[in-house]
Length: 474
Image 1: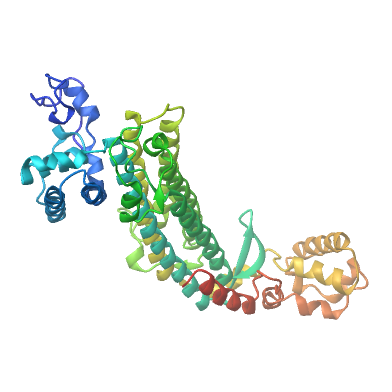
Image 2: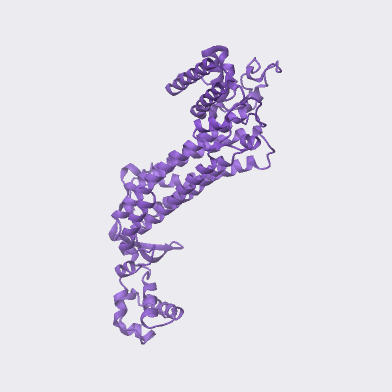
């Protein structure tokens, strides 16, 4: 987009906009034309606009509001315009404000006065509402497919690492050992919830606003059920005012996208940490690493960092549209022209993030030895000791917790791991401890013992992978 200098007006179109009718004799002020024009971004809706117009033309002919000949001419002309746009041979004109007027003007150039029948019983208000709704619906369908592929990649890597031991964290402090497969399955669940929100949003938004006209409906004998069916909607929207003024579907898309961005950002953050020298858990290939202009040794996880960073951008888009829609009176207001850029921006950036994350998940190599070593640090088996005390010595868990804390303190003072304490050391703290305690202090035992539903035991993880494939249709 060209930079606007406050001391330099945009070029002036000397003609009044012909679409506005005969009331206007003068062209709009150049700054009004500049702020009013939306074709620079809403041209993305060209396919949806033509699809909606074709459905409308078919309905008008069926209802005998226009002739079959004019309907066919309109449809043929629109199909030709679609081909030209997709081939890059169509000139979009700012002077015609938006995608709708650009296409209508081009249609008139192609088929003559018959083009004028297309706008019968229709306003730009319901026209843009149906275009935008179709765009968001198309975006949701594409997004669901991309998220499904990400889940599939996560499941594939989880299957490779069913028994790869790593530290589990709380507060970013080593807590208890888990497996890498189990850890990746957590993101399969998150993305699954994202997909469920996509499905819910699509179902809720799948009603057609076409035929509501400007705000009050129309006196023509149109068939809104026909156009709804033609466009793949479940039914027409029930209220004409709501039809043209509702943007819940856009807000819901931005909301679910923001939540999805949270999940992608969390995984990105872990990849940034895990690939650092301080963790050393994973390594990305050259395809998913970048270098430094000054430090030759650097391998930066820039893709993960950008996924993390773009989350904030998508949060901002949601807040932008919420603020725009707040307190708008019914029905359509020009403020709502500001609804599209946040949605377009989020749609593009979320798709890039999902694709990048899918690539990173499939690319990393895990350092199993380093992960296992880290899992055995920081007394991560302390809970296993406390559980053993409660189970074998019939000690209330709070008491077992207290005894274990003393043993951890003793081990730290001796610069030893828990399993390196002698039986005599342990019995000095709790005399009833016997040699069987050492059977529960290995990292392998700690992981394998977590057999409760949803736990990290490798056998659990195998079952969870199979169940997730079935549940998410992968």
